[in-house]
Length: 191
Image (tube, rainbow, N blue to C red):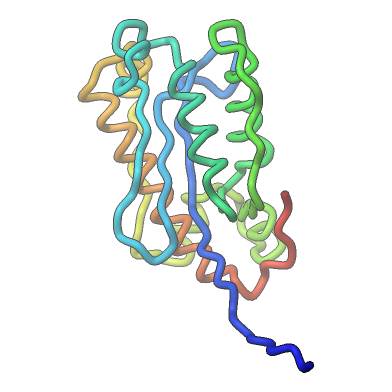
């Protein structure tokens, strides 16, 4: 008896992500928000510290947000970030293991960090996402960082958190557009 075979293409749709924090060190700062955008779809999903029960009462306690971010990442098959391997993921894992949370670290899906791809593809004065966005003239653009608003967001000020969310969502849109430029340079995806 001959076995019927079917061929189908498995299409993997990447999800772009970015986090915003109050400090570059996870023991001195906390997470404010995380944005996720599925490739080719217009909407961005953002998780915010001020939308968690504990974050509303204690704007420095990102434990519930860290768990939400971890769970959102683990729902994906392939995620794309910019400096997500050396920064975002480590920050998240550190906050998850910290004294306010005491949760397990993220079981990361397949992950493509475009920072390393951009380093191979370009020879620019800086590898910052904004530098690359400006050089390529991407239609999506990053928002300007305002330190005063960032400090207010760190203290739980909702309009300032709105500003940080806008910045985070702009980053995932830029990341998606950069991804299209870098597809010829993508060599590996890691788990």
